[in-house]
Length: 131
Image (cartoon, rainbow, N blue to C red; front, side, top):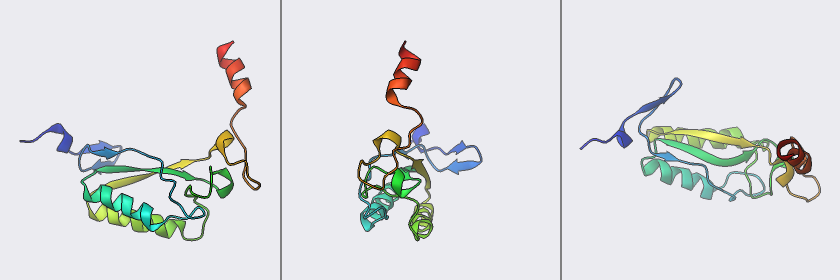
């Protein structure tokens, strides 16, 4: 019996093998911003389980824009190699993977060296939209 869940679909020009999507979840398993074996194993398990599309947890666009060192950041030297290896493994299993890039803005760590950059202050945002 065939169901729509197991039929391919397209995201623009990318064909996804089925409609099983592993949505982004908190990973918080990085080691000083670096992808760990625990994170790699999670994506392998999702691909082995048949997810047609996997969305990663948040990966900070900079070390200073992350919540804490347990969040993956894209600035360390082997990030591209590590993510390429994960992507290749997911592709070998027939899946696709999307990296969720993020700057945590006002939620970045308060420790020294973290960037509290945010689009707007919460108070001004409330005044702008609620008054």
